[in-house]
Length: 202
Image (cartoon, rainbow, N blue to C red; front, top):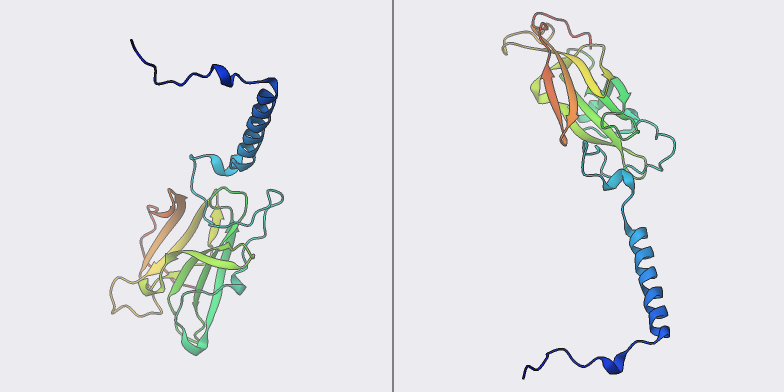
């Protein structure tokens, strides 16, 4: 004779009041699960990763673009400080809120100090924060007038030097470049037909 491992449940037949309690508990669990689900904008696993780690967005009108004049840039300029020579604004990651791209250099009284190009976004408190360095001043490049953000791409003309013997006043290399936010990083593309001699004008 086989003995079942399942206990005899005949004496535990549920009464109507048990069914009501169970249904009520299940309804509560379903409602709680609905509240804990991520919103449509964050639940999707496709598309580019947003630039800002904490946008502070409200889902309404776009936030103002970050103010480069209020940002702290990673330049070592000593007592002379920094100066923002150009900036452009636009939505680079498609989240509906604009970022700011700023060209910054040391505020030297003469000469042509190298430029840095930085992308700014906003913290939860609305403060500007550098989230990417596109051009490091250590690369000894300057940026021509005409920095722009178009079609979620950053466009710029860079002037550089073919050797250390080239005077800083007279860069002899020129590159038209674009950066685009893809897969969590800014990818740079050098456009053809931009090599040659240029003047910085910064």
